[in-house]
Length: 200
Image (spheres, rainbow, N blue to C red):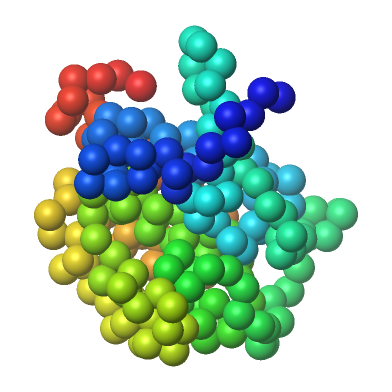
């Protein structure tokens, strides 16, 4: 595998305004959730989904995205395919600016938490603002602001309506629920087609 060594954070920051061109943002976001789905289908949750943990491979004809660093990944299914019961309490896992509010509450993380982290990435890729990001080095304050904004969608008001639709679906999910990845992918593809005239 011929990786460039460039992760998505560095790739994003190489553009003006430190966010991706809209078409690139949507295509990369789709590729990222497809990779996350593969990890989930293998029976694992990553627990540290963030731009630094995705690498881009430039192949000439089509770029590929890879998810890296499985150091704190956890198996959520037993070998027989049954769901591993959620523990009542856990530790904080993840990175403050992208971690799910459940991580700050030291709850067992599930597939939906990986998708919340993915969604925070998508917002940034598209040029949106994460209200807690200025406080990422203050774990307590960062967690408080995330909890405050968790049920609100006001911070998404300048983004396409599909962002709000995705977010409202993700935050209603629970540990046991099977994510409907295709719905989220479909929403992003709708933006590509409607706003950019691209069938992807």
